[in-house]
Length: 513
Image 1: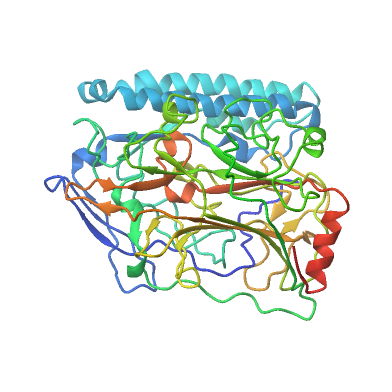
Image 2: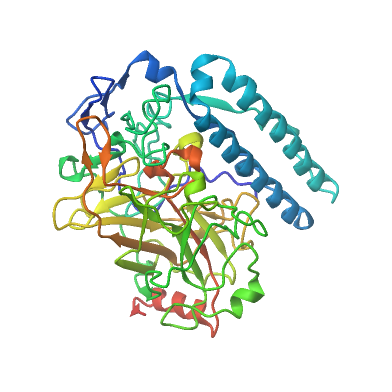
């Protein structure tokens, strides 16, 4: 436990980069943006230009992610700690709502944000972190007192949220851990509905994104998909496909039982669920074993869930006045994928061991706008372009006849002991991107891959810099609906020896379903 997995990359080797683009964003010359380009792209644009007023306006709140720093929580303290971590998320959400509703006061008083929002937020967070300390130490655990220093939050101005979330240099193929060459989120466009004193780049139907520079015409992006690791003689070359539908029955909630068990609206955004049909904040291993499944193979009771995608076309959906929906900036028409492929694949370097029952994996990071891209694992593309272009920090504008595609490839190495970890990351890892080998005593497991296809009318950039028919993934409101915040969740629940069947199918080179 406590291993650092941030340097381990996917066995896959797609170079996921932001497209280089220069976008004139109207509004009477209010804002001009140039995307940073990847080193191997022909467009060498590398600066973002904004007016001083737009750059200095506070766009969002950035708080250290306490949960990511927790690597060892005693079993008896887990529920209490999870509840307090959910309280930290709720506090940020409430602070962002106050930030968004007090633009005029901010314009009138340069100290308003610090005195009325950020300062009180620090006090609440300090008290919550102290409760986490007590939860851990009262059952004999050890608390890292340096975590108390994570109470303070900062603000991000318009240019900070767009000038780059880290300059990561790894590779992945068809959806592994990104440590990519993205220079971050592009500069952004003004929102037509934003007040005169609001930041120029928050945009979106709810005033928290997406913005024009979050989109790119995929036909203008240089190919960036690289080759996969070479297979060894021990490679596991089979596949296992499970057919679980596309959530046609609208099984949604805003919980996240992995990160926030027992906490209603712990995700602050809406999820699609396929597979296990009885997953919410209060689901248990036993209740999931007894639940029905949407999968054709009724031995697959696993839960596969992801944030919904919405089209911001001016309409609202059933949750327009609900927590996790419109009340938290997730607005527009919810889209159901037209295809949802769930496939387990093998390792190029070795055989795989069966997934343990109730293994939990989260891939990607819902908070990249404030955390940076180190754990980003978002992959956006278009049908007909998937083998050429994969995007992390922009949504694709697809040509006529092409559909939007989200893909994920989960961590494929397991520590051999734990079905979860305190930060929900360190019990699993990505294999080495060049060799596909699992490091540090980790074992190769079947790699879960997912491909979601959406039929979306292509967005268009208007003369005033707004986006018509924008689409975006649901997320925490302060994350501004950035494409890089896309993520996916999985709980392995099987019966009738299905986990062993999947591993055997992959190890023997078969194509099973």
